[in-house]
Length: 377
Image (tube, rainbow, N blue to C red; front, side):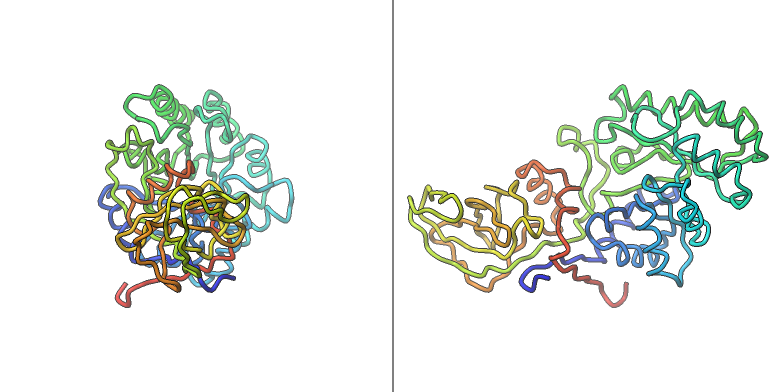
């Protein structure tokens, strides 16, 4: 555990983002995606706060994540969906879904048949995911009629939730051909199920990039992930189309443990990277062991009014930032790698050539998460 670094998670900012989303999508129920430990921010703390803000449906990637939520927050009622990592063939896993009231997102006929044929699942809600073009998980959209017949023949007349996953949500929903095709196919899936006499209770198609562009809001639910943590998920070329203006809910902060003057031509660190100019070299307590990967090399860092750059090799436990020679940098000062400013965060994403998801998720458990919340929230 680090003492000189922290990921400060501002739950008030999360609350502001939730309020903004509700204004953007006032008619939709929200399935808040909290997989990968709440995108690195702490799944339990994020969910506890979101419950206070009126969100009561959450999406996980794994059964283990979902079970952890149930066990850590046993005193509140909320729904949890598991989107990928489970095996209904294993009786113990199937029993966990029943015991912990967790909903598996069924993506194949094999799992569907297990649920339909087993008496203990007779009241279990059917949540079905169809592949409309992502070509990853999901039952084929053009077999939706056969799926409906299978469900009907097993005595069911309703489906709890029908969903699909957009492959190119970060691209234009108005112009990208796959986005258009996926929406058309999803409409066909819904019509096919209904034409076979099935009632569909709820539907969703919109992940963050889709929501940002105002598409998929005709469904009952939306499934925001990245946007509620702050940044836009759209490609830079179409970011002007975004209706989203969220705050980054975390600040990655670290301590400057050493400052020394460096002259042009001096070597620094592993490999002896040579300084190309005079400057002030600040050593910080973050390295790739903490999630500050080597991709950060040469990216811009800011301290007060000064701009520096990550210099030389990022080490396992520390990194160097080269500031101008006249910069007033003091040891034991705190420097922020990112903060609530989305433009700064997205600029860092571009400079490191890492998508925002990576920046968040790669911060290791060695960096403590500290939660900030006002008393009246």
